[in-house]
Length: 102
Image (cartoon, rainbow, N blue to C red):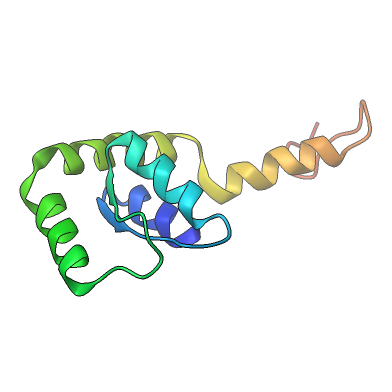
């Protein structure tokens, strides 16, 4: 997931494959956005990878979708914002968070 998010945060469309754990779910979700070709296997053939690469480099819809997803990811604030939200959740009611200075 980390590599997938890193690529999307830089507006890069993906050729994605995954056969176990959470990888098939991630592949399906990224393909659903239009930002990836999902090879639907954990063991793609060279021909499958080549065909997926051809699609994401030739068809502008993949680049457009990756740019849309990337813009949304960047607008959310990344790891710094996630840490800030976690710190807020960990604070007892009416206590200031270290970052907010309240």
